[in-house]
Amino acid sequence: MARISLERLAHAYRPGGPYALQPMDLVWAQGGAYALLGPSGCGKTTLLNIISGLIHPSEGRVRFDDRDVTTLPTEARNIAQVFQFPVVYDTMTVRQNFAFPLKNRGVPEPEITRRVAEIAELLDMVAVLDRPARNLTADAKQKISLGRGLVRSDVAAILFDEPLTVIDPHLKWELRGKLKALHRRIDVTMIYVTHDQTEALTFADQVVVMNAGEVVQVGTPDELFSRPEHVFVGHFIGSPGMNFLPCEVAGRLAWVDGHAVPLGADYGTTAGRLELGIRPEFASLARAGAGVPVSVRRIEDLGRVRLARCMLAGNPFVATVPDGVVPDGDAASVLLPPAHLHLYADSRRVVPLEPAREAA
Ligand code: ATP
Image 1 (cartoon, rainbow, N blue to C red):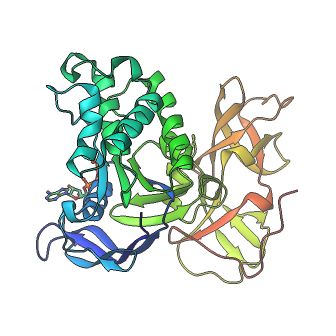
Image 2: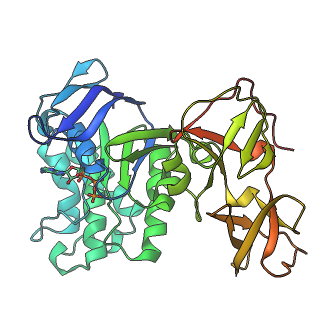
């Protein structure tokens, strides 16, 4: 078990080449459940492989507690890994597969029996424990991989690289719940790599969001939703993502295409390329004249909620349609509650001069 610290860590795959990982400082607390979330090619696997020792970083240090492990091989790091595709010994039974990592380390037989039973129970594999792995389905094989990763109780961390990709969607939900339950029971740092926001938000207490080799925000699912620190997080988290509107700002007022929009806080004079951000959940459609003018392109009825896809000063904008509001033609407006507005300068959230008042 360990706290994992990355100090001025960066990586380029060839000397002088572009950074696959931009310089970063990051601490993964001992016992935390983390997700590493970002689109394909943003550097998730590179970062995971640096933590596991499969890649040595071109810059910076990796520490497990106070121990510098930057150049140590994987075997010397005491880490368990579960990959996207099953890694199982086909000729062994499920039981032998689970027991293998423990036998390898000379764990006493009664302890092996106890741990294997526990993991088999967790993964619903008690009934197939004595079946050879080769005869099982792809789902079951991936569950064996998970079990082999989870069976040791002495690891510094367990790293999961998109472990549920090959798993049937229904089983995915179930397994994710089980991993979460297991994390609560054992005090081991878990890092779960995914490009799927639902997977990240349901598994992790803290989500590390990456884009183009850079960590853009570390936060709880609630923080990522309610206060994205970067335009990328606003777009990437939420469905549909956050709305962004180019604007000008003076103190407590923003101007969007000549319309004044009161802000919930004082931003003084802010330099840079400014955008106002608001989530569709908090922007509501209203009759023309009540708020900032929009032209409604279409209404989507999602059952639970109706969304209006609009254009606002030449920008696509999504707003919630409140019960009872019936758009009359395409001319309408949107209400933008100040407490839910955020200001971004050059894609980063601007901290106001005084804190925003709580939402009413
Ligand atoms: P995915 O979800 O598709 O696996 P990822 O977020 O894990 O993507 P990485 O695989 O870490 O991203 O890749 C990050 C960047 O590094 C990409 O630009 C990729 O092309 C580059 N890269 C990855 N592996 C190598 C390599 N062995 N040699 C050179 N460049 C690489």
